Length: 562
Image (cartoon, rainbow, N blue to C red; front, side, top):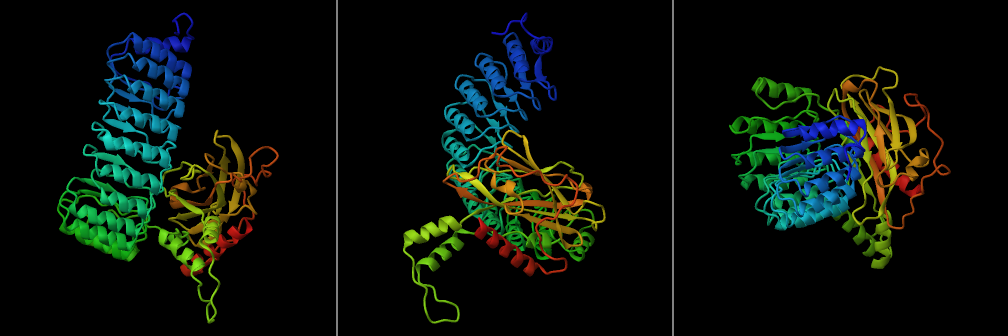
């Protein structure tokens, strides 16, 4: 137990503040560390008036979370706990989970913006299977993977109190989405489930569509037309949704048209967010048509898609100030550079070719069929994950664009094979350094391991791209789970419409990623902001089809050299 006499001056100040506080106690941006959290925990023992504790954006780690959790085992007045944007990991989350086994007053817990992974999520999920008071849990922007999502899904099957669960901005992919979708089929109490900024693709979207209830946020995923069409079918019969967030996905005209058809019969939705997708003129026209027909629909942002100026002007003239919000449209070439994801059907087709004696082109002879076990080995070696990281940004957002390498579905390490960066602006490039990507590589502790200024290739007058391979950027061979790659803001960041990074990576069951250390790290790159010779890309003026071909060839060459 920490005595008042043994406290530092800052600890005493914090202790006195919380001891004398009434109702809501909030102290953000105060550089409160674990020692400060200990003083606050002691003060709470003498206060029976505080009902809400908010310590967001401080420096509280696992030790601080533990002492607060211990106090909450006996405190019976606090109903809301806000520890957002601290440094709490699995150990701190596990301590909070232990508290929830005995605490009967906490209703709302916000832990987003911390470092909680699968172990912490699993502990909280196990406790919530029996806890009967918590109704709101925020875990977005942590490090939960599919294992953590699966644990949450199992909890949702039996928990009857939780109504809101925030899981956005984690490392959850289709496997986790499938588990949550299955749980939603039997859960009858959830009204809000945030599932944005995952790696969810069409398979996960299809599963969610089958069980769609209160899931209102599917933004910042990689849902394409097929996933959007499946969810559109669910929207036709769903009478619970009031707003649906689809921003920052890969929805094109077909998906937008399917959603428009659904809105002809849905009578409850009033907000539909479709910003930062790949919708063109046909999709925009379909959405605009239903917008005029559906009186309930009042808000449909379509910013940063690839709608032509002609179509945008026509929609504005048709609706005046009341139509869909269309501004800052993205160069469609930015999407043509995107590597296509291999689907389950694609993989099955390749497997059948390997095992089915395919005919050689323009020849009557057949290739010998391979035994299935050999084909399986080839498929495993050939498969790699293309993690499209959702780095589109709004103008005036000057923060670095960052990506954290996720754990694989099976818990194996992840070996990065290539990094692609693309930037589109509203204006022609004219400032020195605008065609350079300043990259910073940080390890799992946040320490800078490498800095690199990659010279980009002009794809169009407003679009530049660069692809980094291990041969030219050896640090890629050291990047592993938990490491982060940042792209610093452009020299004219306020003009940036779209910025995206793609990780091509492969599960590495043998753990063959080269260890990082002083002897293995490559020499530092050129100073940030200075141009350097980077990988070649698509020549200016070449069409989108050639851009796709060049990128596919580059990916194939990269796979061969690894």
